[in-house]
Image 1: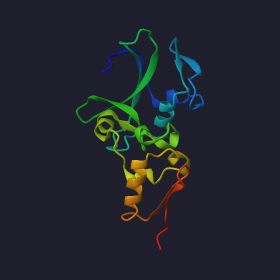
Image 2: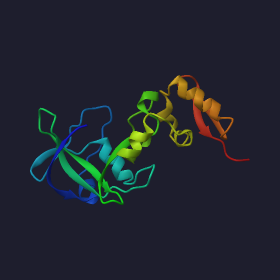
Image 3: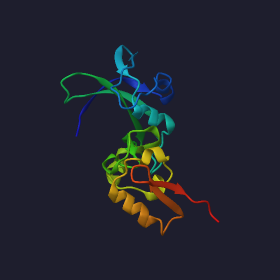
Length: 179
């Protein structure tokens, strides 16, 4: 597990979201801005996921503040921001981004395929998928779905009112309107 060195103060989500730069997916981050004297990347897709929703998609705990941190195991000191919630016991809970359709199963690094999740819920979820949540993704996020997941979706058709197809194998997932 990574150990982090904290620097500075807590930052409100509004302070950080005001500094965000557009994300260019698939490219190395290029947009830096200074935050209290330290250059930081503000093009991170993770920050945009948090801007979309501060709450864990699983348990509902809400991220409350960002902290500037550096990984102590890294050779270079590069600061980044981590979002934290506070649980009922008053302990910090790290918030993470989670792939609705896991990368392991063909999921993409797109804002529509990512959601906020606290680290305990994300660890418990692992690479499992929730068919109902996947069915809400746009077709463009389903073009690289793994054959195993496609089989699961086809099997789910008997339990859910859906049509299943995908662009690469002529299968796409869409919801049927109730009759």
